[in-house]
Length: 346
Image 1 (tube, rainbow, N blue to C red):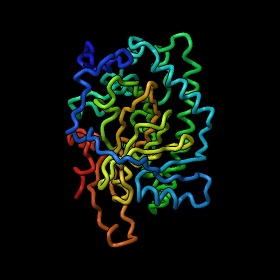
Image 2: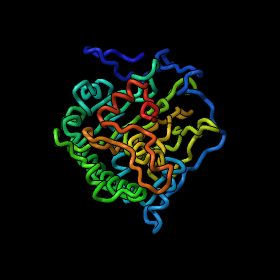
Image 3: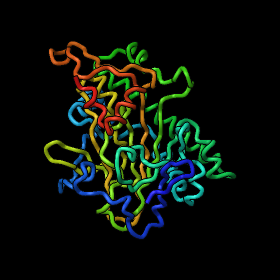
Image 4: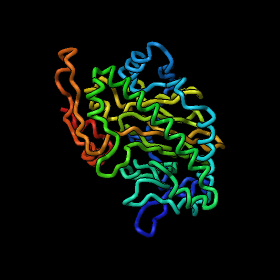
């Protein structure tokens, strides 16, 4: 089972040493998040070429119809992505005792952690994570005392490239919704006036091999509490999306693409035109660890988010969600066991 930290926190189990799945990580088939209703076919979500002359309409259509798409020719260099993958691989390969030196404890936002979703469930997920917000230098010094700088440089460069791409994407999404540049700047000032820190987060995920994969779940079903998320996977297996008619559908992502999925805040701002898609990660029969890097693009916590109802049609003139303060929404979603959007529906 998960271990208890001296200050009372549940901490990640050293999954690499487990010979049989402990009861704390065995998920019931009756649990909503772990139901094995899966299509036999792999689903290919829309592919958008960032260099396409019609990229605005392609992104808008994918966000409306799917809430998720694959982005190619996105401008993040393959060499940088490969170098960042290697940093992530080195990090999770460290001894558990070393990783625990950076444990994400109350009052901190970065470091080694369990999935945030854990608090909504009775069972643990087959996962270990690491949050990077801004410079990772303080945490990386603890992980690699004499060789941290090169790892920091790579991680900071990757975040810089992802932030640049995120800025371009949100501009296109807002333009598609009819939100002007002036309104966008007013809504999305990414520096918190209280802390001076940007509202961007990189979550590193590791899903180690499991002796009994059918009993576990890598990441329980959830929607992202963000404007949108940009995901890079080191392996193609495991990610699934929920379709109301067909159940859980396994994705067949391209190796050269970033997966972009809409988060709760863009569903609210778009008044439901864009959908925050429920997704999960299942553990497959493999001897290799699956890793991913998820870049979350958040609105500032002090911001008030409400539907933007441009009068394009009678339907869009009426808000279908209540407005909410970003910080307050995190609390509402936690109290609703992860179902925040439903709590705001008018």
